[in-house]
Length: 181
Image (cartoon, rainbow, N blue to C red; front, top):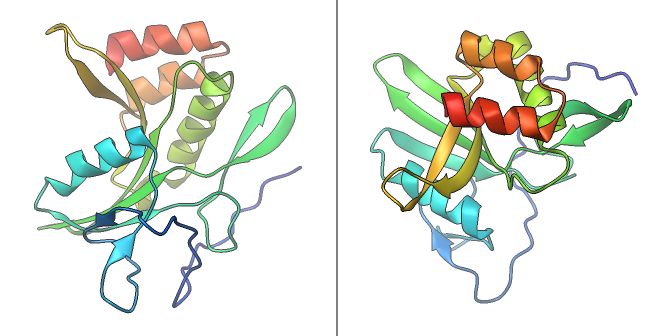
């Protein structure tokens, strides 16, 4: 009921459920015996991951699975109750600054927990920003060109984070997305 900071460390190996015909992905932090990673990702997760893997600075990533002992867990409050959020992707990039860690959460705007999770991500970013380069809530929506694109609300931007922290409804979050993503 009261979240505590616990250092996140990953084990030598993880358990990961997948179907026998799951697609193969490059650069996962954990590989099977044949040096490949197979996983069943949702459509949004897979498409966001492909966008990320197109960036040559990406050297690794993790599909952060819900409720595993090794999962990254971020608290958020919904209707007065503290709940865990497990952002879908943790991406590792490397550039002249060194290793950069990103939390990416593709999230369907039709879900009732949008505003609460956005505020949770913003609070996490406010408290732990020095550990991450990007903390993003991501939505797929139609752009001005009439095509679907992924729009990213970056909690690392203090002006965006301030607006998100003031959100109490999904409609308000939609407005922030329309203005800032």
